[in-house]
Image (spheres, rainbow, N blue to C red):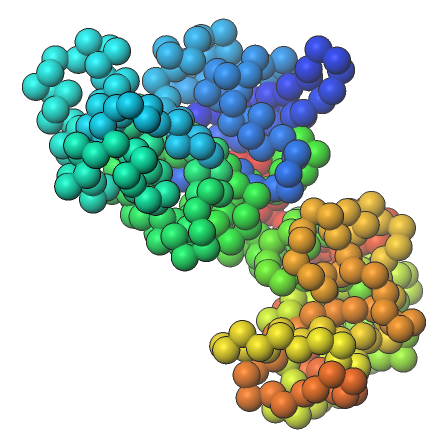
Length: 410
């Protein structure tokens, strides 16, 4: 096992295309770090540079304290699990798992011992003599992982390994990968565009946009204290609702005015954000997560904690109702990060959605006991203690020093 350090690592292709810029991340020995971001953001390129499959244009990469910029992939002592299973169809499961060891001339007894141990750990012992065509997708992915495990590498590099599996199998395999990494304690970097995978697997999650690291932090920190509008909108499903508001002072602190509606910022929000003083009298971006909104007829309506909207769509999920509403508020029109959310996060009804009926479409998670119907005007109770505030001009979160501490690279 080994620590992995990316020191100002960058990648520029021969045609001038820049894929990764100034990537600074220190990954501790035995840590599980997930790179997440929209398609084309540079996360896979970063992983391939660590593996040695892409050359590093700028900066320095160290594995186990050794600079490996110019070290061939086979000598970096890392094992990669790809999106495609990359299994040899003419070989048995046993032969596929042990193929890398056979190339290294590992003694047969040791090879068999490692293959049997990996197969046992992955639940593959009864399939060792089968060919890949006789396995399910999940079993094939376990074989690919077994091939990585038997090498006993310093690090695992996983490039969207679950993207070819159906939804139920993805959940199962996600749990198995997490358990496996905890058991083996091997440094792991995992690439995905699925923020649910990122949040459930990683000790820390690195959010990347256009080749630039936006924030790296523990999953809950990303959710609770996003460094900017992009991270706030990307993490969470459905996405955070982002609305333009005018921030004004009153005798109780601060009020966010949206069109004909207002939300009072509670003392806890104000205390955590001394920099709000510099935003008074200005337009800001207010972020409200769907799970912090509920049917006011059930949750109770309180002054300064309610938005009013017309129901456009109701999606019953059993555990809750995903309700799409049009509210009398504006979405930010001139912030690049906001405009990109519609394409960066495919969840319907995000703040990147088009304005509807002269208002803005927002998404809420109502209690399953709610009986709201399409076309009905409803009062939406907002948990204002969980409200987020962003600078309209920069997209940065408003905290004590403009950004949360967890925005640091390491």
